[in-house]
Length: 140
Picture 1 (cartoon, rainbow, N blue to C red):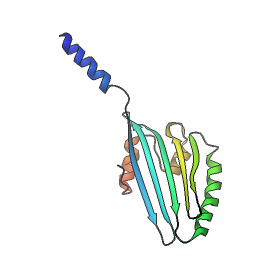
Picture 2 (picture 1 turned 30 degrees about the horizontal axis):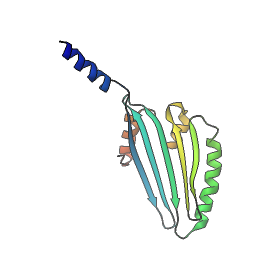
Picture 3 (picture 1 turned 45 degrees about the horizontal axis):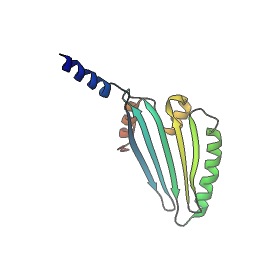
Picture 4 (picture 1 turned 90 degrees about the horizontal axis):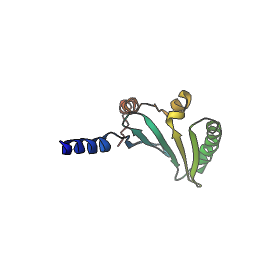
Protein backbone atom coordinates (compact mmCIF):
# COMPACT_ATOMS: atom_id res chain seq x y z
CA UNK A 1 0.00 0.00 0.00
CA UNK A 2 2.86 2.38 0.82
CA UNK A 3 4.41 1.66 -2.58
CA UNK A 4 1.17 2.60 -4.31
CA UNK A 5 1.05 5.95 -2.52
CA UNK A 6 4.69 6.56 -3.37
CA UNK A 7 4.07 5.83 -7.06
CA UNK A 8 0.99 8.09 -7.12
CA UNK A 9 2.93 10.86 -5.38
CA UNK A 10 5.80 10.64 -7.88
CA UNK A 11 3.37 10.63 -10.84
CA UNK A 12 1.60 13.68 -9.47
CA UNK A 13 4.88 15.55 -9.04
CA UNK A 14 5.99 14.84 -12.59
CA UNK A 15 2.65 15.28 -14.32
CA UNK A 16 0.78 17.90 -12.34
CA UNK A 17 3.09 20.88 -12.75
CA UNK A 18 2.97 23.66 -15.31
CA UNK A 19 4.72 22.66 -18.49
CA UNK A 20 5.76 24.99 -21.27
CA UNK A 21 5.74 24.05 -24.92
CA UNK A 22 7.05 25.83 -28.00
CA UNK A 23 5.94 25.77 -31.61
CA UNK A 24 7.40 27.76 -34.49
CA UNK A 25 5.23 29.18 -37.26
CA UNK A 26 6.81 30.59 -40.41
CA UNK A 27 5.36 32.74 -43.17
CA UNK A 28 7.52 33.38 -46.22
CA UNK A 29 6.61 35.85 -48.93
CA UNK A 30 8.76 36.25 -52.01
CA UNK A 31 8.43 38.96 -54.61
CA UNK A 32 10.64 40.09 -57.46
CA UNK A 33 12.82 42.32 -55.27
CA UNK A 34 12.27 41.10 -51.73
CA UNK A 35 12.14 38.00 -49.53
CA UNK A 36 10.06 38.60 -46.41
CA UNK A 37 10.17 35.90 -43.71
CA UNK A 38 8.15 36.14 -40.50
CA UNK A 39 8.86 33.56 -37.82
CA UNK A 40 6.80 33.22 -34.65
CA UNK A 41 8.23 31.22 -31.75
CA UNK A 42 5.12 30.62 -29.65
CA UNK A 43 5.44 29.51 -26.02
CA UNK A 44 2.33 28.11 -24.38
CA UNK A 45 1.51 26.10 -21.28
CA UNK A 46 -0.68 23.12 -20.44
CA UNK A 47 -3.50 25.52 -19.52
CA UNK A 48 -3.82 26.48 -23.23
CA UNK A 49 -2.41 29.95 -22.55
CA UNK A 50 0.00 31.58 -24.97
CA UNK A 51 2.59 33.05 -22.62
CA UNK A 52 5.39 34.53 -24.74
CA UNK A 53 6.01 34.95 -28.44
CA UNK A 54 9.11 36.05 -30.28
CA UNK A 55 8.25 37.41 -33.71
CA UNK A 56 11.19 37.75 -36.08
CA UNK A 57 10.69 39.71 -39.28
CA UNK A 58 13.50 39.38 -41.80
CA UNK A 59 13.60 41.34 -45.05
CA UNK A 60 16.26 40.57 -47.63
CA UNK A 61 16.86 41.97 -51.09
CA UNK A 62 19.63 40.95 -53.47
CA UNK A 63 19.34 43.91 -55.82
CA UNK A 64 17.16 46.72 -54.49
CA UNK A 65 18.57 48.49 -51.41
CA UNK A 66 15.96 51.24 -51.79
CA UNK A 67 13.27 48.76 -50.75
CA UNK A 68 15.22 47.86 -47.60
CA UNK A 69 15.71 51.57 -46.80
CA UNK A 70 11.95 52.13 -47.14
CA UNK A 71 11.25 49.15 -44.86
CA UNK A 72 13.66 50.51 -42.23
CA UNK A 73 11.98 53.91 -42.28
CA UNK A 74 8.50 52.41 -42.02
CA UNK A 75 9.58 49.99 -39.27
CA UNK A 76 11.07 52.85 -37.28
CA UNK A 77 7.74 54.67 -37.15
CA UNK A 78 5.83 51.44 -36.41
CA UNK A 79 8.27 50.40 -33.67
CA UNK A 80 8.20 53.79 -31.93
CA UNK A 81 4.43 53.47 -31.58
CA UNK A 82 4.73 49.90 -30.25
CA UNK A 83 7.33 50.81 -27.61
CA UNK A 84 4.64 52.69 -25.68
CA UNK A 85 2.51 49.54 -25.27
CA UNK A 86 2.69 47.05 -22.40
CA UNK A 87 4.18 43.62 -23.00
CA UNK A 88 6.27 44.51 -26.07
CA UNK A 89 10.06 44.77 -26.36
CA UNK A 90 11.86 45.31 -29.65
CA UNK A 91 15.38 44.70 -30.90
CA UNK A 92 16.98 45.11 -34.30
CA UNK A 93 19.13 42.04 -34.88
CA UNK A 94 20.38 42.81 -38.42
CA UNK A 95 20.76 46.15 -40.13
CA UNK A 96 22.70 45.75 -43.35
CA UNK A 97 22.51 47.35 -46.76
CA UNK A 98 20.47 44.48 -48.23
CA UNK A 99 19.00 42.86 -45.10
CA UNK A 100 16.97 44.07 -42.13
CA UNK A 101 15.74 41.98 -39.22
CA UNK A 102 13.70 43.04 -36.22
CA UNK A 103 12.56 40.94 -33.26
CA UNK A 104 9.51 41.55 -31.14
CA UNK A 105 9.46 39.97 -27.69
CA UNK A 106 5.83 39.72 -26.66
CA UNK A 107 4.45 39.00 -23.20
CA UNK A 108 1.07 37.92 -24.55
CA UNK A 109 -0.87 37.76 -21.28
CA UNK A 110 -0.01 41.43 -20.59
CA UNK A 111 -0.86 42.77 -24.05
CA UNK A 112 -4.07 44.61 -24.88
CA UNK A 113 -6.47 43.40 -27.59
CA UNK A 114 -5.28 45.98 -30.15
CA UNK A 115 -1.67 44.85 -29.80
CA UNK A 116 -2.66 41.19 -30.03
CA UNK A 117 -4.55 41.94 -33.24
CA UNK A 118 -1.54 43.74 -34.75
CA UNK A 119 0.50 40.55 -34.43
CA UNK A 120 -2.37 38.17 -35.21
CA UNK A 121 -2.18 36.62 -31.74
CA UNK A 122 -4.65 35.28 -29.24
CA UNK A 123 -4.19 34.52 -25.55
CA UNK A 124 -5.65 31.01 -25.97
CA UNK A 125 -3.23 28.63 -27.71
CA UNK A 126 -5.91 26.33 -29.15
CA UNK A 127 -7.69 29.25 -30.80
CA UNK A 128 -4.38 30.67 -32.06
CA UNK A 129 -3.17 27.43 -33.66
CA UNK A 130 -6.62 26.79 -35.18
CA UNK A 131 -6.45 30.26 -36.73
CA UNK A 132 -3.01 29.46 -38.16
CA UNK A 133 -4.35 26.19 -39.66
CA UNK A 134 -7.25 28.08 -41.25
CA UNK A 135 -4.70 30.36 -42.94
CA UNK A 136 -2.70 27.29 -44.09
CA UNK A 137 0.24 28.29 -41.90
CA UNK A 138 2.08 25.30 -40.50
CA UNK A 139 3.41 25.46 -36.97
CA UNK A 140 5.92 22.83 -35.86
